[in-house]
Length: 383
Ligand SMILES: NC(=O)c1ccc[n+]([C@@H]2O[C@H](COP(=O)([O-])OP(=O)(O)OC[C@H]3O[C@@H](n4cnc5c(N)ncnc54)[C@H](O)[C@@H]3O)[C@@H](O)[C@H]2O)c1
Image (cartoon, rainbow, N blue to C red):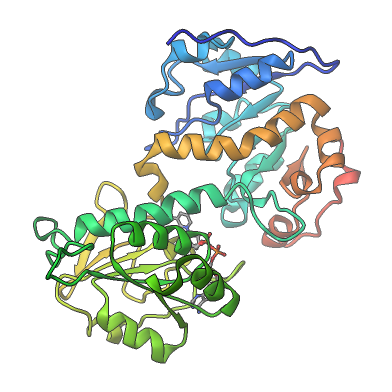
């Protein structure tokens, strides 16, 4: 389909925005879609996208070109762009390209001292997706990836329940005369609710547990008696695990390691060929026998139970993940481009929480605490 070029509405401030191709091994997402390009160009900004940047997500170069992008080689893009949009943290060759730009991306600095040290040696401003935080505590740029991972957990679980894939040979929806498979979900937050939605959609018999009764009330309001809700405690978890054909770990205690809810002894009581998908593996896992795995080798067995501990599940569906992520990031990108980075930070406290490092100063309290320093107030930095 032939796309129309953007209708340009000029603002006083015009910015050069760049989206390079991701170079971290295995990363297939891209930080800007053609819809995002058009939105920026319509406001008078210049957008540079590296040729091939969208390939991993199934977006062709000509889809970018028709909405007004200049396809650019990486070096030229890094040299010219004032606001650089990425998905993953900068790799060493990208760190060398950093001058005074603003970089908007996932950083996860509070787990990476070497990267923190490298970034603070530059004169750039680093705004991390994962710390953009609304006043109610929600993390709008993490939510889309939890939605993807939650829905995927049940899709992957249904696959590995197939006998040929190592599982119990159970169809989650059953058929008339044959009981449905049982899905147990630990945690009714974003991942858990999205897993629940998919499991109910497949016609499974679903149990969901949480320590927060309001979350369980919400489940009941949505699904009535189509789902069994249980308070999460060791007694109820033990009982639920015994029934599970598919067990999904989806708990989070913000800022802490995931609590271990399912012990090795409980796993030993599970049915032969049952499947465990622990989405909380990136926070240490809530099932004792789960260890991190990769998309190349996602599963292993403990006894007769299939274990899946992929730490970057959204990477399995980069096209969906790219659109999900950029739907959430674009309003912030537009705000920074239209108002300037400093103006956007003043106008939007959620975005201001995203600033991790500013021209050599550690601004975010968690990143500063990780390094053992006091944070520098944002107003004291030259954003
Ligand atoms: N593996 C991946 O690729 C991937 C992708 C996205 C998210 N995640 C991870 O998934 C986890 C869940 O994320 P989320 O966005 O759903 O978090 P969330 O905060 O929305 O939900 C967590 C839920 O866990 C509940 N909980 C806390 N302690 C509990 C307990 N003892 N028993 C039962 N429930 C308990 C909370 O009440 C909350 O409802 C996080 O660790 C996140 O990092 C992993």
